[in-house]
Image (cartoon, rainbow, N blue to C red; front, side, top):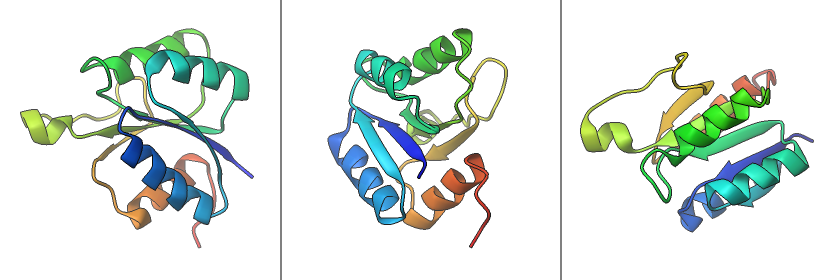
Length: 125
């Protein structure tokens, strides 16, 4: 069973995402701030990280993703964002933003599962 780390300061988002993933056979670990997330990721070595952009600071998610990549952690990262709606700017995978995919919050269960399965290389059902 794949282990997915969910990192977001919004407890409702973490709980909802966790319930969807667990109902579909995934194991889940949760963190609510970057320092806690970093330690959790280093210790538990999840197969996928779902990471919010904005937590304590507006760019916490970006900094955590960059830190993980600098340390050689290649775990796929799906980044949750609501920033593009707020500022009208869209993000995509790039050298600067070291994540594998972006998704705008709120996300439907179907879209979440599609993206998770793609990043984990699980064949579609």
